[in-house]
Amino acid sequence: MIGKLMQSVLSFFNLGKAAWNSPADSRKYVRYGNLRAEVTVGDQAYSVRDWGLGGVSFDTVPDARLIVGDKIQLVLKFRFLHGTIIVQQPAQIVRTARRGIAAVFSPLPAATRRQFDRVLDSLHTESFLKSQAA
Image (tube, rainbow, N blue to C red; front, side, top):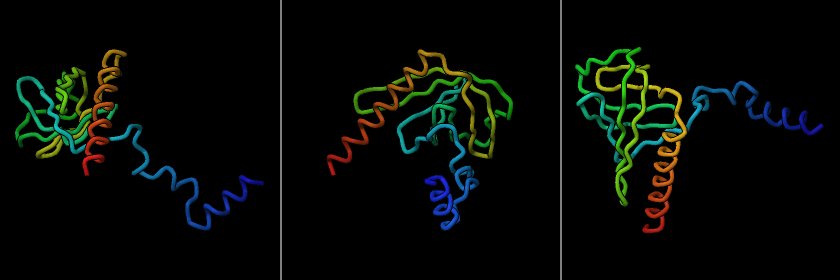
């Protein structure tokens, strides 16, 4: 009974099951942007555009010489008020553009996942502190 009622309400607003699977909602992980972070690939450092537990996108120079399919070792540096958190993680390039790269992380070992959890805790803490200062 409740299921049919819910379905009729959703269909009234044109929100069938397909709407829940739209591309905007299809990401497996939340993406975080607007942060002070950089990623180093080889000996070249780049600014992070955004990142999530599944991967990272970052700005590059036009001739970065990275192509889709490349397997790379990333060093991510997240800068916070209390210090810097450094995470090393292998990844694979999945998208390239003239001035940007997207890479998906290899499966996260437990220790790397804990490092990313520290990054998320620091992001949330700084966000809370900024909201209290306003």
